[in-house]
Image 1: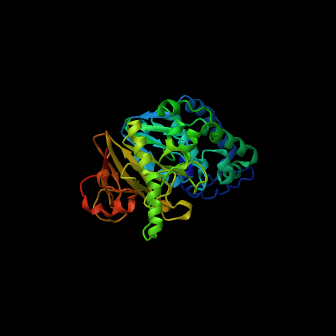
Image 2: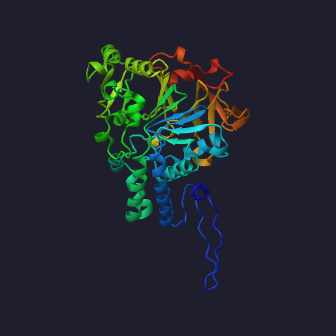
Image 3: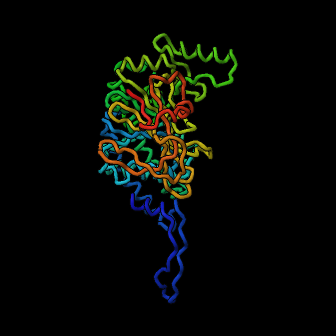
Length: 425
């Protein structure tokens, strides 16, 4: 599968085919990058079906809450953006996951909206098959059939493979989604999910009750309210700059004592924007962290202009790993959890979608040319890896106020010229 995807990625010049019975030598057409060319798509479908069949067992054998050790790279929503996924690969696991000292944790939402959901799933599933203990795929809210039917992944499967094979592939992929874990921890301190934290009334022991979530889970909304909230919840957001005094006061009140549910769920409010699950305040997050002996929550689920946002007094990080989302101009990012430090890494894709060459935001001061070359440390390897540095980001949890986001973190970049962007745990 990986070899097939390498062919898909590359642009190929047309060549002269073998002669036909008439003695003519027809010219094959050029193949653009990110195109299957003349690949027989039914063969690709059969390959993906076999891969899905194998991975159902792999996912089923994983706990619903996976425990990882650092170093671990954490990526947010991909949403069919195969371009950016390949760029992350070129810098984070260029030599393959087997030779990397790090684990790779994906927080869900692999499909829908982007045009290459099939290729993203094929790539991630192939890597999972080769490195099942190092490549961890969590379930997001778009790994649900009803959601995909309202968006693009089901139609994409049928468009690429035809109605018959397309439906088979779509259902096989979703049988894998049904078996994916829901949450992960890194070093027992960082809680990682797609959406957010659940209300306390939904569990007594977080680890025990998460691992008791049914597997498979084809209908989480009916089968597991705990899993549903983890996949769908959002943090309460502070008022935007320029908001009215009344609006700011209302938001502050909501953050202090939001509770649409009951006395055991103080700090939670119904998620009106999603129409389901809940929003949680800093008070709710702080109680969750203390009760479960975590230091931070890392989640995805919401697009971020610079690829990430630091929220709720630095205890919550949102990461989004798909740039130009829905034809926007946002950037992509990932997180490195490395021995009690969190490093924020932004991917510059200003030229990626044309050249396929990645650039990264790291700790160089100021903005340099996209072609400038620098080095970043490779965790646990003792060596360095070539990267393309164009800007700096640094933030510390001790100085991050509630709701302080990536824009504020970026503004302080010039204050630190020595270290990769980190948050001390």
